[in-house]
Length: 216
Image (cartoon, rainbow, N blue to C red; front, side, top):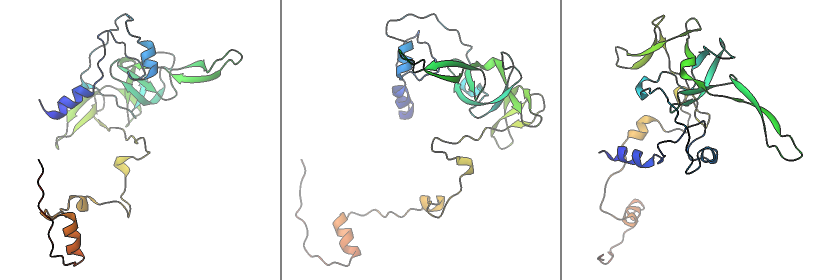
């Protein structure tokens, strides 16, 4: 077994078989509140979808096929593969109060509820209509999503990182290190100590040599 595979297995959280996944990450307080130790919950059956067959990505534009927002299009902001859920920005919302106390009714907010993957369809960018997609390979060997209805390629969304940077649109500035400088080999191995290298750079002559030391 490769070391990377072993480390990835060790990094996964050990969850019980009857653990019910939700919109919160398993190690958060909200998820632990919904899955307390020893509590038995009804099993939720989820249609298995292989990782390589998952066609909806964060940042995609999709159309809702069923529900109160049927026919509306929105942007995918979250994906939950354990439950075949997606959350669309500003759609399928429900309203609730948070921060309720004895003499304060709380703040009335709107939050997006998850939608099943079977209730949405990707939007073809050529005509802005919903379509089914399938994975294919181009002549260059790149794996792309192709619209079944039009045969056009549905490009993968451009998503910015948490720091606000979009890697595909990044342009190097004057203080950025170029790839050529990064790959340039400038280190020359030597048996000299750091002090001896500094003295050689500064043209300092030193005839004394440190006494040999042995480590046991």
